[in-house]
Image (cartoon, rainbow, N blue to C red):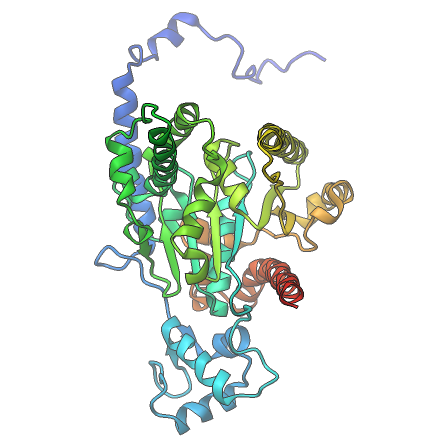
Length: 461
């Protein structure tokens, strides 16, 4: 068919090279990247602080009587108000008449009161068996943009609303989780890096005692390692605007660990590099201090991710309902197998030679979670993914709602959004997206604790 002479050709026709050349800037030097980075840094700070208070810090909003009775404490609104009236020492909230608003600290105190005075068959406090360690959840996938940080943040916030004590560890040098949690991180010494360095330094120190007894030269402890030896977890753990969520933050310099960890391993082949993260969680008592530890990983299977996966009891693997993300996640599983099987083979051959017990990596549970789900367009492919991954999949698919999108723009979690900014149905639907995800995660977590408890009790007999 002949082209209509009045219709212009497509924009990629008749491009004049000389005119195109005139539009170009001078060749780009590395200094231009520095300028772009400075602009991006300012923009990132400006955008991240949209939800901040005038003093430059994040504040968690208050929760209404309706929200508390519907989502947080299993008590009828009329009974809730009656209890407050009868107990003036309890937090009374702010506001006039029945429209009372409470801080999360208030909610936690009210939980304690109802746990002591309320109906014995209701769950006012979250369940965790006494004497058992916290559960560690790593959220990982080496494809970016699949919702790792959003999933990790909302699991942490869901657990906090339930009353659990949560530690979030940001291992992604992009620091997105740190921004959501309102963290401030000046350099790598305020990240997990010094604690991982301390783990290596302690192994060097132990090895040097053996070397000294054998008359051998010691392994070096440089200035970084010497400084790390004096570090404690408390020095890098920050309080957040959530009263029961603490944070070990991240920033760009954390990426240095990806280069430093293999160097340490080459200097001392007996150092279990994959145990650096779990080592400090255990030795610093963090698994007793917290109920849940959430590890947000970088979008790569590097040394930080390997440490997170090794430390985890439960793996959550977010992916979108697209072919590329399904394919990438399958390759991620393949890399998990090859990486950890290789570590097992290498370590166990040495352990067998020395008569030591073999190591084996195990996880309580692994679940792949479909995020940003559009039921109108992605149901068929999601069903295919569900069929192939089988029992690795969660039942619920996390829908993308307007509320979720708006929270992302404001660098907030949906639980930080005031429902008065939406109509009630929009809020309930948006919140359900993560409530149902948390319900599945919590069921896994409690089931794992129960199984651990039965094993512990059986071992005591």
